[in-house]
Image 1 (cartoon, rainbow, N blue to C red):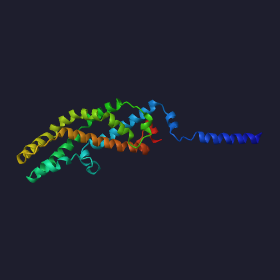
Image 2 (image 1 turned 45 degrees about the vertical axis):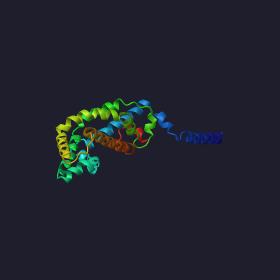
Image 3 (image 1 turned 120 degrees about the horizontal axis):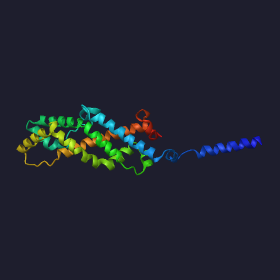
Image 4 (image 1 turned 45 degrees about the horizontal axis):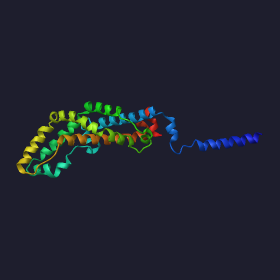
Length: 230
């Protein structure tokens, strides 16, 4: 009888070992409620947005953070406006425009933070598990798909105000006036639209990087985000 009990216990242990092994991730799905999953996803976005704003929308952020990789440099104008002015001794205006633009972008944190909060709070999560078990930036990419246009539109007012406040508009108008003296080639360029797009793209890129750290480094995760590291 004792031998039979031992055999039975061994069979049961083997059964439990294989039945509890989670090859599909379904155990994680069952372990957390949708409310917990949604909280983890949105807390990840909040933390990522906060990090992005703290890295870029601060003194010398856009201009110099990560060796200037987020600098708004107007490279699309290099072969037209910038080269024309440079040939006629006004290359300094391009440098001035770049510097003033980045100072504008670095001084929007107080205005942009509530916009990200609103976008995150209103984000509808259609498939929690797909985002949680997705790639390293699945959550940020989802956020970008559904909230990019909202944020781009919402950025317009704070950027517009600062175009004058930080001297971007005066420098830009001076450049256009001088450009028109040396060429009849029209310049079809919406500077505000460009600045807004570069700012938003930079912030989303930083959010994506922070999401990958949240997923891989416990130091970047709060208790509510623990399931992202499963």
